[in-house]
Image (cartoon, rainbow, N blue to C red; front, side):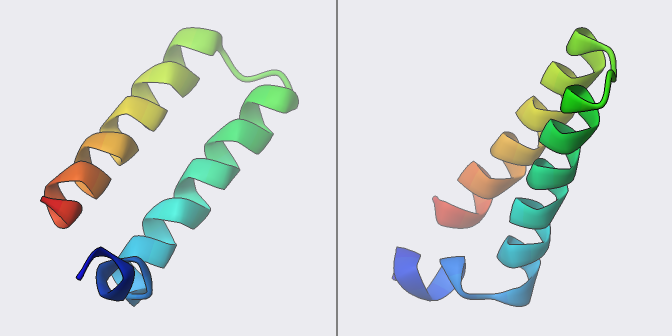
Length: 50
């Protein structure tokens, strides 16, 4: 079931958002901002997979 969820457009969008946050951090974004952003994305992913 989790594999099916990971293939949805919504989950892929969350994954892309996480990649953007990491790229922004690499370009100089604030650490705390990036961490909060990734935590929010991870929480939404966990909810989807639960």
